[in-house]
Image 1 (tube, rainbow, N blue to C red):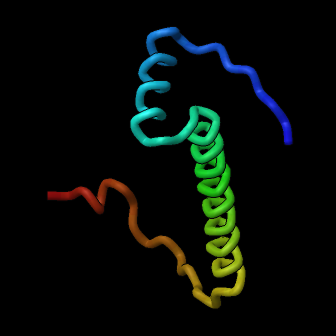
Image 2: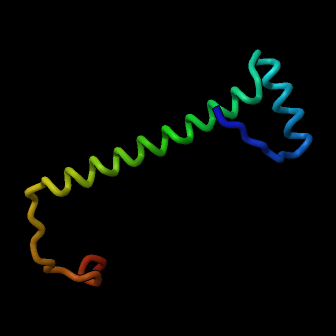
Length: 76
């Protein structure tokens, strides 16, 4: 398992230590959980984008010729 070194503000570190103590956990556990959340969010995002792209490529939808212009859309 790897180690990392962080430089953070002393005040922030004290608040984090206090919260970790209240929650009966460690700063390392909190940082690990947040990193896991960060990575899994990105993994889900990439999977969703691939799914959308796959759907688009399989789609049989046809896009017709554009018969309008911007000015016509905004006529009042």
